[in-house]
Amino acid sequence: MSEESKTTGDEAEAVEVEGQPQTPPSERVMILFMGSHHQHALTSIQYYVPDAVHIVTSDDFRDKYVRNLNEWSKKYGFRKGTVESVPDLFERTAAESLLSCVFKIAGSEYNHSKGRITPFHWRVGITGGTMHMAAVATLAANILDSQAFYVIKPEEGESVMPNKQVIELPSLISLKTAMALNPVDVSFLLDQGSGHLDDLGSNTEMKPWLVGRMKAVGMIETHHSEPQWRLTPSGYEVLTMLSSGPMFDLRKGDAIAKMAQSGDGDDFESGFYA
Image (cartoon, one colour):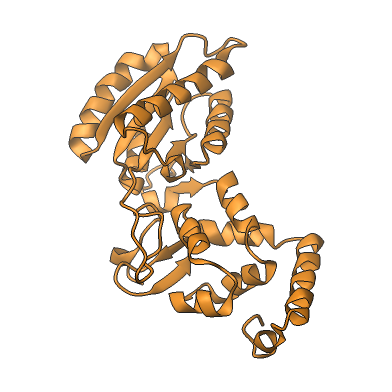
């Protein structure tokens, strides 16, 4: 697939299946936790091209990010969200206050979209601010079933390269989605890495809704005009993590035995699950 045809799993929740109604694109919302430095925010915006951006920061930087968000929204063409700030960043109540900011943002998006929010399409930046801000940001991403990410600071003299410097953290929703897969199908996905969409229907037990879910959470991506799929780097990492260890091998062995007992042995012998 060419770079121009890449998708990030954010365009639609459904995979393009003939005769199946398509889900309209959902808004790509970004929540950035920010401290004194802001360069990582620009890298994040350039990488994800969000539809809307919200910021969580301390009261000390609120005015700064109100101005910045206004400028960035005009420059990069996204909808300006809210700037939520806390007065107690270094108090024992900071975690609750920061999490409350995220819930306010979710409420704002709920009202804006008239109740049609899809938080698993959202991105939460954990780069800025203090360590406990990063911890709360990661917790918030998991509560929302959103994707948490971190931006690496470029080396001295190195150019900003969003594709290299943005690192996505495995999300709970990706892990939960992966755990819904037959262990044999996990091995098939890892072994193949890419292929024709029809192969997923004929060579695995994956139903169209599960394929669509994997696309929606960013585990696989599909070609915009051809029935092709491939694992994303995030999808590969999650499936590799899931398939590590003896428990997975036991589950896979049980799945193969059940397939043989249920009359699916022919498919196994033909090499579909080799």
